[in-house]
Image (cartoon, rainbow over all chains, first blue to last red; front, side, top):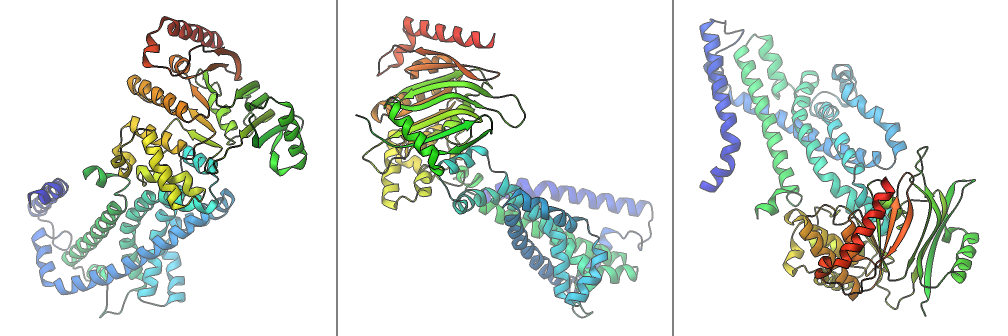
Length: 263
Length: 293
């Protein structure tokens, strides 16, 4: 128990203290300045709506999480495969990279109608929008990982007459794993944003909704307390996804870095 | 009588400025055979008027002539940036000369497990996701050796370099700088190379560790003779290890002097306190200073 606390404590305590300070400051600013509830609700009011709407919030968070996780996993698979294609030659990279940047720069508002046209309203379109938003960091990170191998290591493989396939499997791919983890961490946060933005355009039916729908509904009704509760749910979902991906990355990179030293 | 199994030659015609490997062009094969017939049979590395330039830059090496005998230990000494490492990379086949001729002839041997060359880099260049044993095993894996051969060779290499069996399961991050360099040396030796190329392998180590590894390297070289070409900018190290020290100048790099080292093997650590050793170090250092002044 003590060991567990010693490990987690230094990570958890500072943000918890910071959160408490923010809550206190928020409460004092709203209370002292007598700000209207529809502009900025008190933390207590937000907490109250969280309790009242806990079922709706949980259901919406779950639906958004499903789309975010699906989109994120597709991004990792598609991004890794694309990076593998990019790493094959400079010519391929130069030819295709501008189109990868397109993913990063295209306004999702502009392509959302197309996505809905092609995939219909609901889950599929939300996942597609999530993939479009969260794909780029995986492509760039893994491409760098596959192509930035130290010259000494490349020379070592070349001198031992390694085939292209051996170099890829035994050198480039393992070398790219830490880069994949970095890209996936960035992508995991973007996936939640992507899922919520996707729900704006291609949301579920009113009896089967996600956080994006709740954001639209609460802002339309000037339910700022519910809007705050939805934003907090979104943030928590993003943090959870980031933490999960970080943990998986930690397990994957155990050989590279910390675990063996601790052992 | 030393026989030669295989030779590789790279010749460059200045007017066309391209190099080509011998075994791809029949004319070059004939030239190789002619060269083998005419050259002394115990010459392993032969370079004549060798030069290299990268794109439009000034040549890194120019008019470089060099001969290294089979099973000889030669040190290449020069100041930083004089092209020592580039020369080593060319001999290893990792860089192509833009002028002159470079021939590397490998002696025939009974053992099919031997490789032509091993290379020890300035950095250990270990794969961090592999254990010590798996790092040492890598050249055998890449060349498709059987699992049994791999196991035996790795064990032999670990013993040769003085690593305990328990060290084999550690990851590179768990090792000190000296230990990592030992693993790198073990990996270069695992295929029992006929030519061992060492590119300032101990430059990043402290002096005591460097001296210890120098002594270990000499011991290994005496137990398992091979041609060794050792690049360094440390004068005492060059004198302690080698039979000949080749001093390089720079801009462009070329060998300006070859100094015979008269000490017999085995060489003990006490040699470093011998007045004659100090005199040789002084002589080589003066020669090196003249190249930069």
